[in-house]
Length: 299
Length: 299
Image (cartoon, rainbow over all chains, first blue to last red; front, side):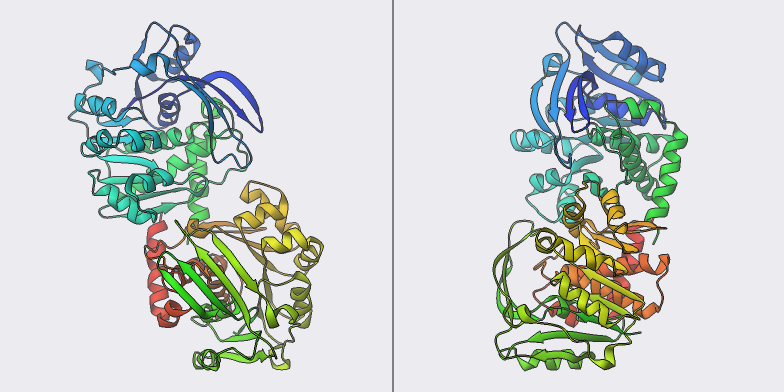
């Protein structure tokens, strides 16, 4: 089945101990799409400005990512400038220019409205909710968010959570959203807000799945070659949703595998700048890492 | 088989969001012994002062912990004052008084010298090395250390690492010892210093085992009732070494199980102050949590 993603497409300038790259392809929908496409067909809804290189659009198409929902608006493309230092666990945002993404009111094209697996990448909760209501028949709608919305748009975020099936948060966001320090308890509080599945991303420490019937923990696939952590979270979500769409159903077993594929795909993303590593990797390579991860966690 | 531990026996004063306890039983050898005793007989080498309550000694004995190596010296017992706040991930040490532990030159009693499983709890590396050389025939000698020694007694620590079979470090210590940020690479650098097994403790994120032939990652057993994290690391080591002594051999499979038992026992320790929770728990409870952990990590 197909995965639909609604999110940002950006031009990033990124500095890490391994170099500095300017105006490279970034954005949550880009990372998500490349990752999910390793498993299933992808439909992308997003916006770019007049300055967005057409070659990136062509590359999406070449990879089989449907960009009928990627519109071009007058103005400049979303830009993010970030820096990572030391253990590279935290991005310092040096500057953000929302540009055309700031005014974006996503319209899901008619031919996408029967989408069954939908990912609402990080955006204003109100915008995410508008999108969610455009695809009422979806089987699994999962939303991402960030600390900024938890702090400044709490009501909108709670309204969104009441209408989605799943949410992906990192450990700090889970704590911030609930005021609960213990991650299991925090995740259970998030469940009580509406979603039937909560995925807590813990960066280099892996991820946790909490549902009414399951608690699952998977370590991160231990890559030793981290060059640029940008996009790890969106790639994780892409691997996760892509695998679920490939399976066509959402059981506890599929969800567990989906988290594992998420961490594997994220481990690939961070091994190079931008989408380079994901662009170069095969489904076979992903499957091989999953096999290794199974072996490394077998008890 | 029996486990021998050489380490501190202390009186702790601990403050957490769940209360403040004064002069409670603490110290690395105490936590280790209670934990290991859930699996195997334990011999303890340590020192206390004249003020150490005899009831704690009797309780060690009652639990089947051999205290022939626990000597009483003129002076006061080792004291530690600590505080945990917020997520309780970091202990703030408010005061330390080494007292009789500061001058301690451990002598392994003759009847302990055929010990096969030995844990050198955190102490000056030079002292740990002296102990190590008193039990040359041991099958598995594992050492703990801390940031203070890495910073201030590096040479002594390297000499120790060249003569032990295993080392237990936390993530920050692994990075500090090697100057390498990536934990897998850091652990491999530690292997190159001598030990044939390196265990990296990651607190609430679990633990990692690195040997020449294996890489294993296990999440922490997710207790939701953390009251006092003191002793988690030593309990982890106790569960790990206790299980290995119970098995009587050190294969990759046993090592993996040993780490899992370590995290399970640590999860119990932190659920109450001092040794209370470990004192109240049964081997059955530990086995049940291990079964749960297996289930929660099954991929």
